[in-house]
Image 1 (cartoon, rainbow over the protein chains, first blue to last red):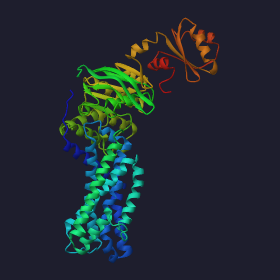
Image 2: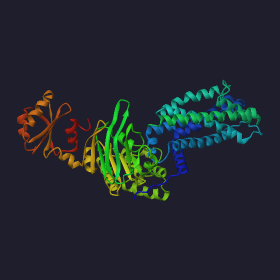
Image 3: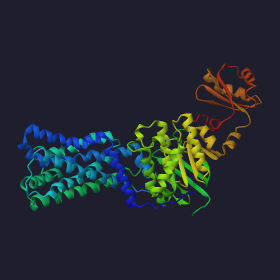
Image 4: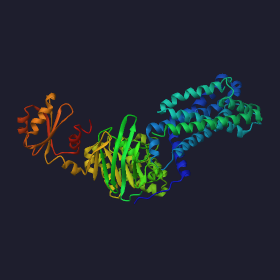
Amino acid sequence: MEQIFEPKFTNQLWYLTVKNFKSMIREISQLVWIFGYPLVFILLFRFGYGLETFNIFAPGVVILAPIVLISQLAGHFAEEKESGTLQRLITTPVSRSTVLLSGLFSQLIVAAIQIIVMLLLILLFGVSINPNANIFLLFFIPFIVAFTSLGFGLILASFVRTASSAGGLAWFIILPLQFLGGLLTVPLVGFIPTSLAAEAMGAVMINGSIAFDLVGLNIIFIAIWGIGLIVLGILLFQRKTAIL
Amino acid sequence: MIILDLAIETNNLKKYFGVIHAVDGIDLQIPKGSLFGVLGPNGAGKTTTIKMLSTILPPTSGDASVLGFDIKKDVLEIKKRIGVCPQELVLYPRLNARENIHLIAQMHGMSKKDYKERTDDLLGKMNLLDRSKELVKNYSGGMKRRINVLMAVIHEPELLFFDEPTAGLDPQSRRVVWDFIRDFQEKDSTIILTTHSMEEADDLSDELIIIDHGKIITQGTPDELKGKLGEGDILEFKVKEIEQRNEIIERATKLDFVQWGKSVGKHRIVLNALDGLRRVSEIMDVIKVKMEDISVRKNTLEDVFIDLTGRRLRD
């Protein structure tokens, strides 16, 4: 009666990504965190500081959205480790790297939705976007920041054992990125992903610029950050979960 | 080398965690199609053995082949052919029962038609069809335990590892799971069942090993192992005179119908006596202490463990 099946990597990746996505959207607290945290700042700037200030900080508020993915991804993998589901999955013919990739993919889908919603919300709340602004770049700059968030999230997931500790410790990365990068204030450090992204986003959104030294170069640096962090995160995660 | 009629063969298999010898040189030969029990107290090395055989945990030393494949070199081939039901309830709480079961089928590459039909069949057998679309987080412990089992068998594996499959279940649900395991074995699968329940091991296993401190202390069919204890009944009683336990046992075993005696824990003494029920008063006369909580029963696998280690399975 036994049959030996030949599973395909692409099917496994798809099914795991769908599973992660379903698990995420069925948890109200995660939805509140993903969309609620950036929304609070939209409301705060729009109605607390007024439209003029909001126009200046709107690019940073959009960048804020993918930053919350740090705790999302770290929490996701910590939960898989804590509950034993990661171990259960690897008793099937699925590789550890497929499981890992599926986690990244599902968060990237969330990032894409999040960024589109944030852009629509800032428009709805009256932010004036330069008519010459490149729509693709308005989406792409925060989206590429999401890769750096996933890198930070993976590194964090390597060290934490529980989802709750992942959620708590993520703040030690989110807050410095948020404040040092000048998402809600003036930037204090120029070379971190958030400050590079805020500068590029501001140039596109406010000035309608596509200048290479302000936009293109910053995107390249953010991409380098993203690749570096994800590679480091994958290495650490594989090593730390080799024996579960 | 592929050995066709053995499901599992191990040679001096060891797993050490620092100074802890979790598995300390296990040699096994498990024939295909058998239901093989691994009985032992908590921490005896049962789960670690299963983790090594299911390729989750690399051994410290020794060799093992599963369905003819080497556990170190042929990991993927082994994973395609096995199912693992872990001791803990390992489910996705925000997926429903069907989605949890389907996920494992999808990882094995089953076709959608096949896994949907089979899921319906399995859920029916476990009396879970009517609530199969509810999120698992809303299930009772017993329902979760049954889903935990179904996730291990959806792909009809050649070899199944059940690690304490009925832990924490009420008697009725335990019966459902036992019937399900028996039914599965009748389809020619090989089943490895770890348990610390002597009743479960006795009822289900064709053959079993008892392990303690990472070593096999005895092996045989349940009847063979119980037979080794002799024909007598088991008399178990509590005594207040803790310091006199050895003298009590010595006095009792001088009686020709008392085959052996063991002290268990601080207060209890277990004797194996021929026709024990009718001879309780004779024993009391000889040991000259007041017995409390006396019970007389047929011997069990727990008594085999007591005989070999002087401890209970749950100590």
